[in-house]
Image (tube, helix red, strand yellow):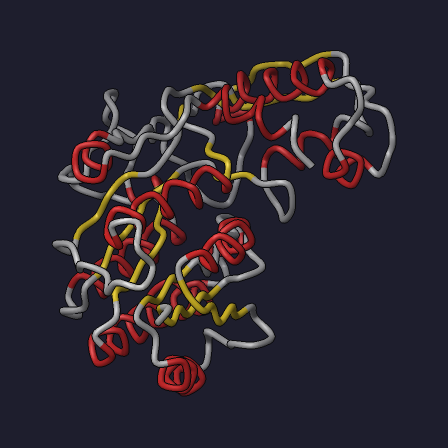
Amino acid sequence: MKHSILLTGANGQIGRELSWRLKNIGDVTACDRRRLDLTNASDIRAAVRSVRPDLIVNAAAYTAVDQAETDRATARIVNVEAPAILAEEAKKAGALLIHYSTDYVFDGAKTEPYVETDLPNPLNVYGKTKLEGERAIENSGAAHLIFRSSWVYAREGQNFLLKMLQLATQREELKIVSDQVGAPTWSAEIAKATMRVLDSLYDGDATRPAAHPSSGTYHMSSAGWTSWYEFAKAIFEEASDTISAPAWVSAATGGAPLIVRRLVPITTAEFATPARRPPHSVLSNARLAQTFGVHLPEWRTQLRAIFSSD
């Protein structure tokens, strides 16, 4: 008998990658915003009780970092209250809850990669609500795995990769922040890593009940690190090396040629945004590797791979 799985955020960057992969281990009820309104507590409870899941994967989040500064109420509902309800219902159902969080729970004052035991100190509303969501899950008593990732990008949605490609069709010069450091992570690699964790819990047998692990938080991001400026340079290097543009690149650019000629490194102070960002938010993935034997590829390897895929 296959497991029953409830997936939220099915049309998000991570959710899209998970929706078809999760079918390998169970019957998936994939919910996007239209099917499940995470701002409605009764809808969330009804969805969980209808599906009666063995596994809940919450890939939904309010991720508009700057917009969250003025839309605090919605950010809190989606990033705090909804995960808290999912955790409460997971406990009642005896289900395992997987939840995704962010490197922005840290303030970036540390110069070495952050480990899970480092004290969070978010600088913006987005990071604060994601941290509150983590704590709500931890305090629920539900079996859970929280995966923190960083600088997530995908072939669809809104992210730095697609924004750079779009701007490159409009401007010959782009100014990019060079004093923020992190690890760009492809959503497909997050989904793959999640499935490897689940495979280890199911021991490769989808018909067996999952062995609920000790609940905890794990970092799940690319190996290595870079700046936004160097990431942008790498994006255009990969784009120029691509003989025929993948479909997602053509969609991002509208089929227009890239006319960008110069990238200019600037400081955070020169690029004012409503939300403060941590200057250094690199995550250590050692605990994920030690516990589950899961490793994510280096960030440049991931970037190269997305340019070779449709």
